[in-house]
Length: 174
Length: 366
Image (cartoon, rainbow over the protein chains, first blue to last red):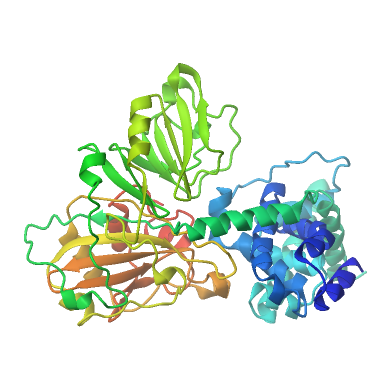
């Protein structure tokens, strides 16, 4: 609901960049955090995406879906090489939890998070866009600049991987 | 609930839960404005970084220079005029390093990465010049290595506040902005540090290695070189090669920085050119299905500027994406080969991104 309201206002071309960021910033950070798996990388990706948006704001705010535009920039900012350079990061085999968790994750949540850490960046973005943002395959394809079939395949592979992981853990528990 | 629906629901629930751990929105718009202003300032200052390297012309046969008629062509670069200050400002045994539109002279140090975590320093590496690149993200207990493992370094584009940070035993990390590029020198030799910064200067158009600080390949990743009178086949004896490594800009990013390669002055120009010519005609290895279209041509590319006896010729080397890999002189496209990558690597330091899968496949040691 929040997104719809903000998007509508933006489409009307009446919202300043600051107002739009104030309304949508937290949502973008959540999206970026899920895509990157790292709070610092998330902030960096969001800022980087918004820098591009800010520079083009007069045009973007009149677009049909400015939030999709910015999400695309965030996803690509993370996928692209330059983000890797700026963050000076290397892929790691294991996910390190940087934030204290008040409530321990359920086994399923942990399994999903660990699985996401193993996914290629583009596939991870597709999964987040599908299951967190609730976008259609076509919408995801437009954001990630690839075909709907490609997105569908990536998401289905992720589903299969999670299923296998959960079954494996179930077998282990048995 | 069908199995697929159950798995999808697990995804939704888990992601919603994990999203709660996202960082809070704290003055995001202001931070973005600040970043944008800083970047614009950098661009205006002509900070588009160039990188370079030259295989200095060590060929025994040196006959003439590039044809004057070539100089106006789009992808033919005039040889740089040497700044008159070079000989007066740089100690004899030092070399010039170029990055981001600035040049600075340094002692004969090795090469490394900016931001190398101090606790990963083995102590085996000597003093070095670091440029941004992929390094391991790791938290170190101390900001600098223990005394026995400390080595001086110069880091380009190290995003820390300007000023001097002092440590024990006379070690100081000093950061200055030259042009728009932060340069940090870490050393226990105050005189050496002063001398290094004294040589730093902004590059006008082409750096000392013969590389333009801006190149259209950054903005147009699919661009091909301008074939000059038949390209590589007619260049004649090559006297020197400028190896210019550029950042290929993500069209969605505001970054316009180029990524410098390393300078080299070792011999081997002839072998280098033979390596290019021996690559089989064609393109690849490519795997376009592995990349988004936006980044298919990768994040960086190398422009070789061959200074031949008949004319200069640019040769593009692409290796960092999923598509468009190969060696191209504008006339003939050749496949990217391990020999070519080795030849580039041998010129200096770790020039190629180790995360590039194509590079890793062709040169397994990466």
